[in-house]
Length: 355
Image 1 (tube, rainbow, N blue to C red):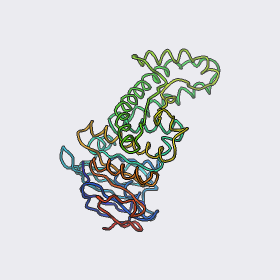
Image 2: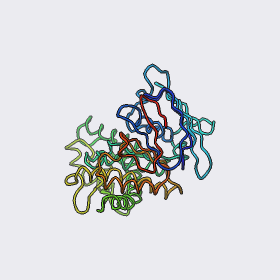
Image 3: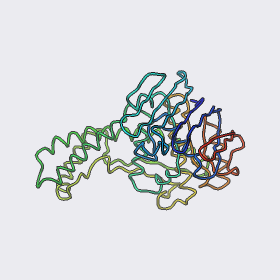
């Protein structure tokens, strides 16, 4: 999968940016706050219709502009895909694929794929379990776009069930019905996470070993386990019923899952150095990219923001070698020292990009 060209208008600090994109590694180089990360974000938004940096589209629109516009063409094994997006400050955005309107994000995500690493991904390794659950859910949607509603449906059932506990005394009358909703959606979320981690873990571990010489071990620890997830979930809820009534909250389900990360035998969150944690965060994304390649038959677009700043020169060289093995990769880099020798270099300043 290769991005052939991309056009940004009024996106973040990019007033008008049009780029023909070569294959291999492309490095966007420049000081901070000049628009490097914004350009990567724009490419990711174009193919996923979402940004990990903001939950609202309003910040994506350049100050003073009415809307932002993204256009680009991606060459895939199935042919060329033209994606056009108008990002509006309110209401639905306008999205077209090959000149035809689309309404659902999955209609774009099923055609073109990208994997984005940001420095904030360090929180997946060092932060709270919510960060690791979010990574698992993002991975499920990346691998299987039609499953994008599973977590949202589970969250709705969870909120309603918790509301019943907080609003009443004793056993809520409609709790059994919401148990069934929670179980149905929770089983789907658990199965998706289990399958995604199974595909990512070994590939991320291989990448980490190549970069750091040690092994990144990834284990999914679900709240519910067993061959029959539905039965296990139902049994778990029954076993914790009295505790839930006392604490007035749901104590069993995917919202209690954990993703264990270890470097060798050491828990990454507690014992990994900054460099080890940084490499682990990058390798989780590389593992996802390689799992996607196995799933769809071609590498996704790989977008890495400031990937080398958290690793030493030796790991930097090894990471570069790993990137050179893959498909098209766009990097945002603050200075020339970190630019791979094989990269095409673009200079970024004040929201403009040039060779």
